[in-house]
Length: 216
Image (cartoon, rainbow, N blue to C red; front, top):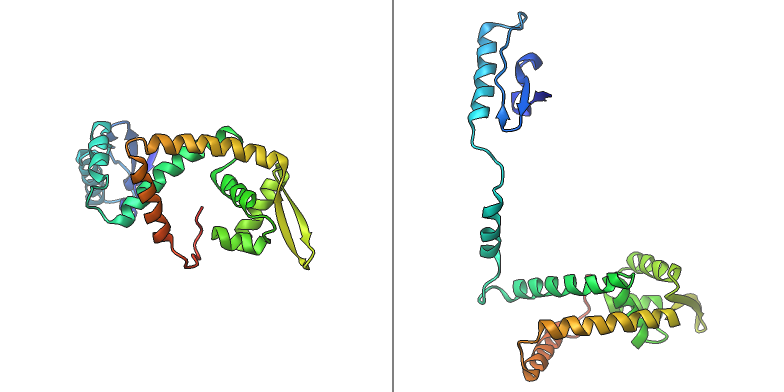
């Protein structure tokens, strides 16, 4: 297989070319009469040095210890700990949602519609921290699946009010039950008082300020 290393781009193509083997570079014998012997020797020496360079292949046995060292510690920044905890819960809950044919974001939108009747699309977007484009795309998807429908707002015909359908309520209930099991398993090592304390702390951290970023 022809090989050309970008690091040899200053050399003629006939010099910077060679063959690639599975474990390093073969050192070709250059006999192109159009270039000087000195250029040939430089090209051969460069390729030979590359073939002798340490392999950049990642050894699998070294990956796991490195990952363990990268895990947060008890005294890590709280923001980092919250981020990693959220990653773990998001992964587990997304898996449960997928079993029922929806995504994590689908379920959160359905949850908002299940508890917040008569919310306009703008109000729903603010509640979820979603911009208009993202929310419209999400509602379009849920509407195609028959989980959401939209009607006009009698107070203002320019506005639309999304509503969860019976099928949407059924899917939402199933996923919500699966999520409860995931959360129960994740918090099984804590007492009820500790879980409630965690809820209160998270609620206070969220606060009343408007978050312009997406929560999904």
